[in-house]
Length: 229
Image (cartoon, rainbow, N blue to C red; front, side):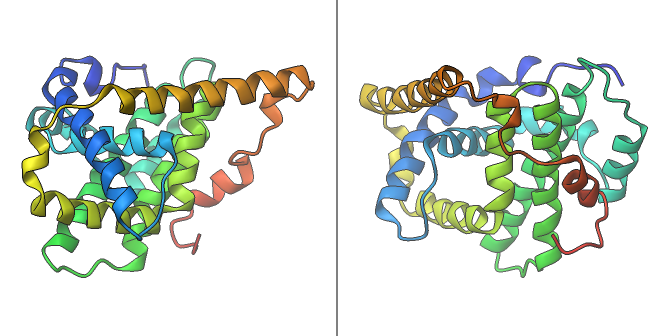
């Protein structure tokens, strides 16, 4: 499989960029007002982008050929994949795209009062785990950590996003607001804090490659879709 640019690199970015900026603002406001739970700054930024991408018609059109019919399709794709250097990105894109697609589908069904069974939540959570594993293999530990945190908190994140979508419906007028500079400053501080932690680890002689992440054994377990985790 040859690495291909993601849909956001093929012209889909411009269509949802402004909505992404608004989602960051309003999702942060919702989290401050809600008792559902808290997200890290990096999770908030990522999930705002996911919501903007997956609700943009052009982007949804672009990813049609990337969506799997069943978990077995993902399984077969991975088992055919030889993770040579530089060849991990396609699996990251596929796993992330399918995880996001299914997450939005679950939220939409909950909004329409449809029951979502536990095993249906496990599939996109596993996809985020697969994306985390291959992002780590590709050397993108920041993205790997974000995917892994979403995997571990998946049910909570679905509850938060479901509540957020209801909040949006009730406060749709807020979508016309602009994003204040102080909000971008806040997330800039999050990035600086992360970089400072990395520099501190390097000064202390801590090898970042030994940082906890999804192990090969845990990853192999994700391919067994009958298992409970």
